Image (cartoon, rainbow, N blue to C red; front, side):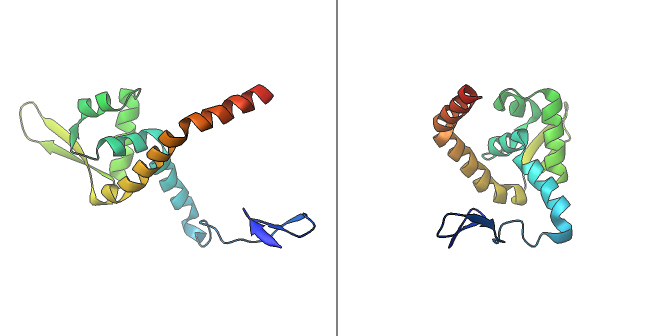
Length: 140
């Protein structure tokens, strides 16, 4: 018998569910909070904003131009959520006119490699995934 993807497969090729340790084990009472954080950092706009802020602080309009397809409302929400989670900081410079910049915090920077790794994986596999989507759509 061997275990694969949370299922035990016996020699006669029958399957039975067996507990296999996974990333969600031990979350306990923190599970709702962990899920909400994963929702935030896994949100498409959040990921893109984090990736765009990797090199330097940016002003709002620079961010909006750097994230294709994002609306003003969605950018504002994404920035607010990322700031609330401590991933982005908002700095207001007392100038006329006011200058507001957004940058990654040290916590945001610690997430950056993971976000960029995910983006690179998607970029590498985009054609293969599109092929599978097309095949699936043809079957259904």
